[in-house]
Length: 225
Image (tube, rainbow, N blue to C red; front, side, top):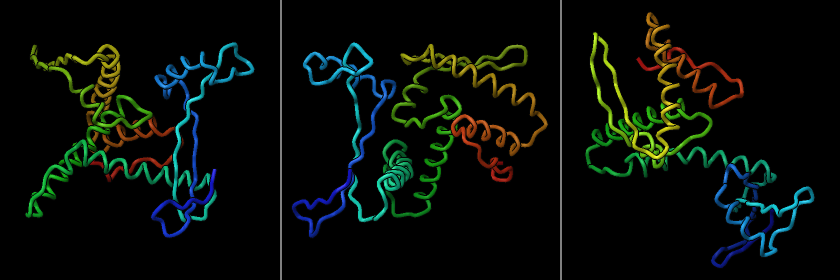
């Protein structure tokens, strides 16, 4: 839906677009459960093919813009803009980019690069563990780091035992074991490979798991040494 709106303090009317998207049950189960209780009040109608009422849950977005494009194009542009801005917001609020200030430029640069490097490592690791969606550090760090590790050595081999204390530990354990097995097989099969070749294989898996649409292969010469 689109229209013109002039709020108090605005010098002129502006184009306003209201977007609405229906949320599926798997996307927003809590909201759907709350609305299911409201069926008894008669606020929701029964669906033609169901005996019980079907509450519909929507998320709304209001855009104020001067761009002349049609609604679907604007929705895509603003969504892509938000996707590009979210990592910077996450870096500042969850990874410490906004937590240091100094008059010396070099320490600021080093601290910012270290924060970005850790963010990249953690994002790649979690994309391998749980592909399909980006998960912010505010939820993934407590989930994946709430545990204790112990290293033991026997018969010339080192063994690392990790005990997760998070409530999702049983499910996370299976995910981590699958990834650890794949990495171990990769290291054994690629024993003679160079570091860039190993990273090419890992990056290719991340792209394949998270972006099903075919695209260019990751470059061999852009992997870290």
